Image (tube, rainbow over all chains, first blue to last red; front, side, top):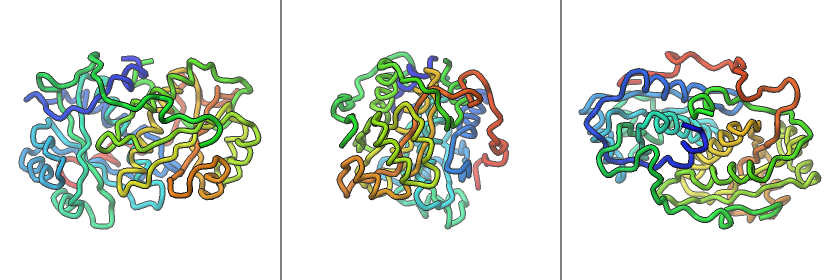
Length: 168
Length: 168
């Protein structure tokens, strides 16, 4: 799919079909993460792929909006070094690459913020000093969910509400 | 360009041709930003497009690695609400959309961190309480710079260095 179309049509998917992801698709998603840019090319991240149902269930309990992990084909946790300034920003760039590469394969995704971050890190054995702000659900969209090629209304602000020229 | 190819081939471009960007290309870049996902769809951002040479010159002085703004066709500043947790992460997702949409048009870009953030905000008239962590340079790549379709060696870690399965 054309990159602009992929960006424009991607929507959060929270309900997933009971269908595993092909290994080649997962590989491309992870490669997309690997190619992400980062401050001074520090690549301060580690990605943890979770397919174990019990682990997904436990992670789903680590935040009020994380329930979609329960039904996901898999989750990918993003753990980063606590770099002042750049860490969260770079994690966001990485997350976008993962999700776009998935959407390009017809795979939906949704970010689950880990409000109970310490608990989530302990579930995955992530060292305390790392930052693990989210786990992303991935899976083929269930019936009725947004899917590739169908442009849903996403309720975004108009361009002139968010863009200014030369000055604030 | 296919979304995965766009993600895989995108490289930071720091030297730009002396050539303006077509309005339609800029519009697609901004639309890509507009379609970005954000925590609870809060869309906590404002984008400031800067083409004025003097303003770009002044912004180039706001960080040790921001010099590339001087030669850019334009800069886009990202100002976000200081949301605890999500603000910087969402700004990173937005930045990735902007840069990928540009690369899809053959336009290069590079993130300039605003180490002197207060100074940068004052140059653009951005209210003190907003977070403006970066301005992104955009322009057609100068001779010798990475360009669309040419896969440069970007020195990324191998996949098995950054990916783990089920546990840290």
